[in-house]
Image (cartoon, rainbow, N blue to C red; front, top):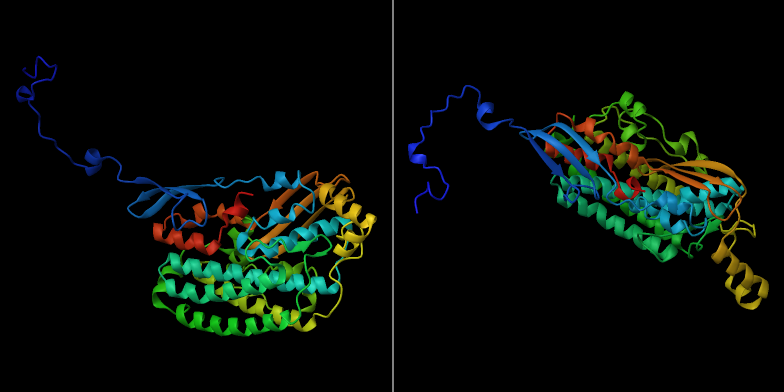
Length: 416
């Protein structure tokens, strides 16, 4: 059957004029490409997504999306008792769970007018600084891996695992600890634990010096990080950036100094501040903050004395097992505590704490019941993630990978 009878025009009789092209875009259209980076890209720190318009490999425009791991943490805080919510704080920034535990407990204790015993406060400080070190080791290590320096990552990861072993001896868990309690701690530190912690700090300093020698002056690392993704001091203030990202741009604010809690005013440490606000300076600030945290931990171990780890307040103190098993009053108290929780006086409180990546705050409104009427969490990742689009405009895709690693966005805290 002929092409004409099948409904197909006979192209043999069609004459095509030769194309005359003065501008290649007339033939090919716009040369820019829209690409999705994430939410499952191996360089993304969690389920994040950037939609970027590229000219070659240069990012001309972009926007970022969040919400892929939203778990309604704030709403859960309004539907769980104050005690039950401790486990949910682990899942915010899971790289430094202990910091979240401490910050949340401080907020509820402020609302109730409680002050934990000295030993509990010292142990909390050790835990907080150990969590900060773990978080920084992950940040600089993964940032290096993203840019091709894999062996550097292994040095820090070994010390991170050693730290988790110490945390495991403290509370039986490694990653998600749920260690603090309102008015106290899950357990006291075992005998000799402080000596093991001090030995870990000595070894970590030695390893940190090796890491410093391996990467800080490396020519490739410097070329990939210096002058990349600059976010200056003025922009940090305007965009509410905090933590190492702000200090790398010259903002000399550390809540452990400006608004100290527990015994931070009684320990000596410096606040490292840089000026350039690029990927390299964020790396340097975190490296020095690890050293300062090691100093704080050593001082805490020296100052910590034997003593109680619970505040003497029946509202929040969990009864001892011996009392629960041998007295009716203890059994009833234990049952009521875990089944219905404890009443928190009506009022509101906001407590901010210098977490590993910046200001972590818990805002709680109470109406006198065992559950928060309103709870809001100020996680630094939310504020830092919004800077990524303007921060990387005009840079290459590979520079965006380094920038994202340097601001250390954690998806569990971002989508709270």
